[in-house]
Image (cartoon, rainbow, N blue to C red; front, side, top):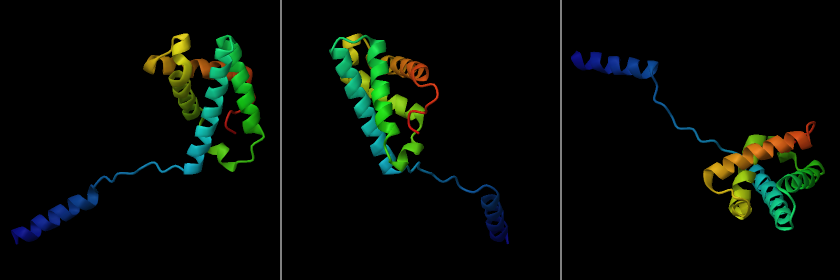
Length: 133
């Protein structure tokens, strides 16, 4: 009889408090590939402009406009799923890793600084556009 009550007790607890399952964020690989292509394109343009003697502002505006033009004329339907914050983070990491040392940006602090700088200049350069849409 005691076994029956214990079994019933644990069964009720299980029903009221189910086990927590792990969920993974499964994103579309084509979105990741497009985001990688965009960030590679931007960082390549930005770093090239810096090496050619452009100021940080000039290089940023130029790379944003060139990359935005490529995205605007792209017919890839996956571009609407790219989040601006995620893209800005990826661009920042790539720029800091590729050429950040040449203008004093390294590590996490450099990435955070470049991300905020990128978003600020982006809003000023293209206030009516959405970088990935």
